[in-house]
Amino acid sequence: MSYFKLKNGEKLYYEDTGNGENTIVMLHGWTSSHFVYTEPVNILQEKARCIIYDQRGHSGSKSANKERATMETLAQDLNEIITGLDLKNVTLVGWSMGACVVLNYVNLFGCNALKQIVICDMPPKQMNDDNWKLGLYKGEYTQKDRELDESKVAFYQYKKFILATAPSLQNLPRILLSRELLKRLLKCDIGVISSLANSMKDQDNRSIIKKITVPLRYFYPTPGSLFSPKIEKWYRSNAECDFKSVEFQNCTHMLIAENPRLFAEEISKLL
Image 1 (cartoon, one colour):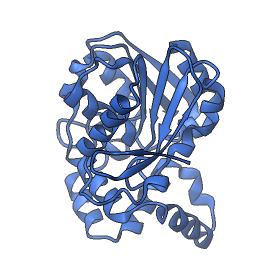
Image 2 (cartoon, rainbow, N blue to C red):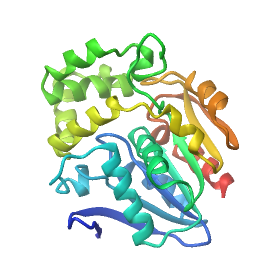
Image 3 (spheres, rainbow, N blue to C red):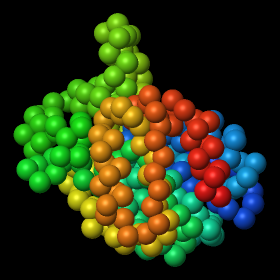
């Protein structure tokens, strides 16, 4: 097992496999882990150096929890990994929360170390309002919903999120579902993931899209689940860099886990 030591002394679990001129850094989503990329890495490591890691408070990095974590914190962690491992020519891939980290990285550190960016099924703004209907829960999540959620225990919020992410889980018997979700949740530090959830909801990263100076690719599922496929049109209309998108048909927010081979093939094309 390998751990990257941050400047504050905390450690992040990471895996560094493959080699070549190109480097791919892949960031997982909220309450997920590096494991979502394991199958794609098995394919991609023959063509590029692949870096996957558990973000603080998650799985192998659960104990990296000594400070209040925000999207900016995770972006700083990413920068430490890129600079600490001396990574260049980086294809930066962010799925779900990982995409929010990517946008914060661009905002704080620019695109000089990057070759291109891939965002997977994530809008630049989660909270919906009168002027924005492309956020969380396909445009239905408002400030009132947030206030209600914050009055509930962490497990309630997590369960609501997971069932929206992968609707098929609703078919499981209630006891089995609760047991499985609790097992997954306990792999995370509750304080960290709660802080990160709030940080994501606080952010409006729409203006950062125009700061991207390298090619941008958007991978999105149809019919989707957590977010609307219509976000693709917003990115296409607002990106000022080279932009292309890839549709993952018959997929939910879990598009990488549902079709890891297509994901790997599309990343390979970018190299």
